[in-house]
Amino acid sequence: MSYGKGDFGLSEAGGYSTYQSADTGRDSSSEFTRLSQVTSSNIQKITQNVGSIQKMVNKLGTSEDNHDLREKLHDLQHYTNQLAKDTNKYLKDLQSLPPAVSDSDQRQRKMQKERLTGEFTSVLNNFQSIQRRAAEKEKEEYARARAASGRGADLKGPYAEDRDQHLISLESPGSRGVPSQMMLEEEVDMEALRERETALRKLESDITDVNQIFKDLATMVHEQGEMVDSIEANVESAGIHVDEGNTQLRQARDYQKRARRKMVIFVIVLLIVIAIVALIIYLSVK
Image (cartoon, rainbow, N blue to C red; front, side, top):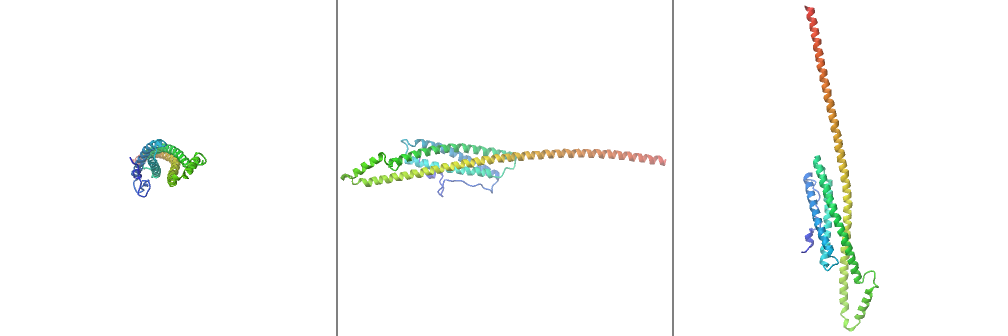
């Protein structure tokens, strides 16, 4: 089965990224759902790719090791690295969405973001581990290839004797066609070395990208903690205001009861006064 660049989602622009920024014009709830789904899907893809990369790395340095295997490995590693960077951006977009209207929705969003962040951190750890193992094997193979080509640090080793023997054999009458063949072989070796060096530098760059993602995740987790503290403080403040409102309502009801009681007493006293005045008038007339 071939793993060409098209198999890894290579865009027409020549990159692996499929990232789409958050749509600020959409409803916050629907946008949260979209970002959560694409983040979860990317995490699953990274998990699957890490498993495939693990199998390929295990074949490095064995009888199954060849140029085609390394090319597939490099493409899959780089594609997975881009998936990780896109996922990191989606998590940032989730973090920047406006808060939900209700407290229950806000709690659900918080749990969802924490779950996705935890899953992404876990799979990213696995990816970084296999990246470093692949880099170690690549460096070992690169060092061996340099040494075998005579362009390593030790040019005075066994290769020097072999090179002298080749020079001696070149002087023999029957070896006139050999120099051009050797030059072609050396050019092929140099090209292979350059390819391995380029691949190694690319892998090291990808490892650096993953390290940066870990820093971003640490910042996001810290900000999530601050946001949770702020939400809890707001809820606590709202609770205090509710308690104060209830107290004021109780006081108002007490004031109303006292006012009614005073009004009843006043009416009773007024009726008694009127009755007494009426009685006096009645007696004086009679």
